[in-house]
Length: 345
Image (spheres, one colour):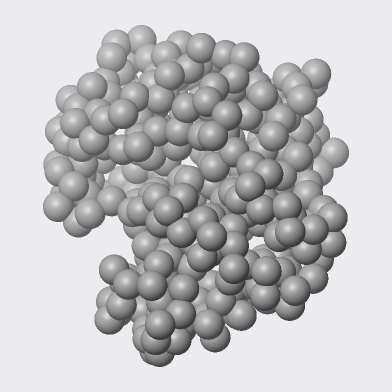
């Protein structure tokens, strides 16, 4: 048994349990115990054998396997497994017994999904990003040019088309089918400002084309099966995205960000959420160098911002930060990884 793989599965199982997904946690726990020489899980994860546990967690290997099972359920390829899965049932013991045979029977499609980093495209994170955009709007008082990195299917690039329910306040389109509740605490920005998105751009290394059935299903598969509210919200956002014209460009983030230079009369914003961990250090350095160049060229009439919702590995918490140049990096809020709350600083 690979001790590092087992540790990675245990850590992800604990995270699922903590985040309100007990069925997924139990399936991952059983999958971890099934990592034995000659077993199907060990075979499928052979490329990660011996990789340090921290790298396995950062690559979300356990979530890739979990998503592959959910994909087979959602696509109708594994009806026996679907009978053990939410919403039909929540029987993790029988689900895993069935899943081992399903993994054998569908090893090819599962292996293909395992090569792809998770692309949850959790639209509730937009409730945290909204606070950042409101902060930018208050300070810049200009229309926004938005550039999203690691956009997956680009659903969070449509953040201004959602209906937000923040306490007793509603922001956004009151008729939107995508309803995003969130709890804000502390010195929250006032959600009473109208924001205008003048330009909308998005990129991903391997974008999901939600107009393709298989791609849309794979996107949904990253959502934990028992969390029906999340699933329904994501399905509504997918439908919204399918009816729109946003195209997520298949582009390296470092090259893409070069196009986000400040522009007079607009506030230019580069943003992303839970993406940074998937970008290799050499590309991170290239992105940072370009951001510093853009910040140096910014003026009062052409401000530049970097808004990101990412894990602070030192503090072990998810944070929303706003940067406008070297020495100007602000912690706006400590946030829930799925956007359920934001504690504003």
